[in-house]
Image (tube, rainbow, N blue to C red; front, side, top):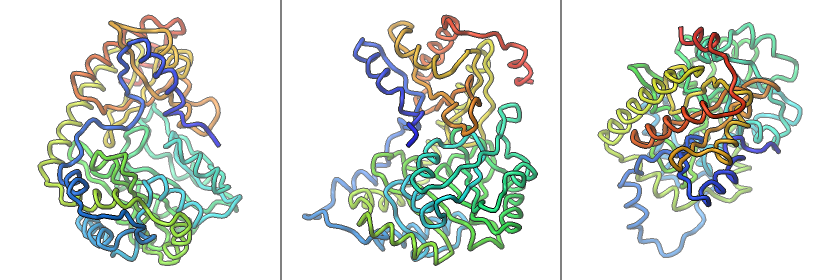
Length: 399
């Protein structure tokens, strides 16, 4: 079982805090945005006396209300075509175990959400990476590259859109190309869309469930964690128009009994979150993104693409090894008694040797904290003994 590259440096961060240092956590997608009051109030004001098991598929009232949400974003489903899961993570695990057998292969554009590796390991599935490059701002690899990866064991393609860790948003044109590939080889298309609301600069999100002609091939994984800034309630959803998938995933849902009861209460209430909440969050993330990306690209030897969605970017750093650098910042470095925690990007690649000088950085902190974090990171890069000179490559990327 692979270790999480997002959390493996936690012991070093804990030690830094014991030394009295302020640690700016840019390593994990934990927003500091307040959870909607309507969700918090629903839990605070519940009058239940016994926290009982719920239906294994999730509360019907929640599923019906959630179906209305999806209909509002152009995804025509009903409450019988979904299962409520213990976070988006369980949705991915259920999807893999339901649709794939041990020894099957899935193609995943890398870098990708590192826990896909863990879920694939649990399901006995082999991940076949197709590499996207920071030199092309992590655009979808060509369909020819996907075709070259397909074998007799290939059963599916996994995408995250908008993407974690890169912040890339797959265009409608790219999604249509994937549809053609899925049709040609009769593959599953597993689509992780937990960052659907975080799409910037007037762009629009094309869901895999918007694609016509592959309705029985698409499996959507979703979560309330980022949408409503309530990662700890652990509520997600597995959605498909293919009833065989839902029926068989139900066996896994019954085996774990039910999703969290209080989390479902919060999540159902969150569907009544007013639009002005999302408007404020959107504007906040735009401000954070623009500030942080500009700050990164002003540092010597650093290159960050401009993310089109989510709240992450993968950056190229002028260091010999991003994991060593990340650990060094926590164990050996401080600037004005503060330091920064980042996620080394190598853990988001499946191909050995890739991403060694890249890191994922999340703009999940308020601007004042981001400013301090970026200054600290800049000073750390200047002081790091394993700094490398990659100015030409960096400048080429910025052009």
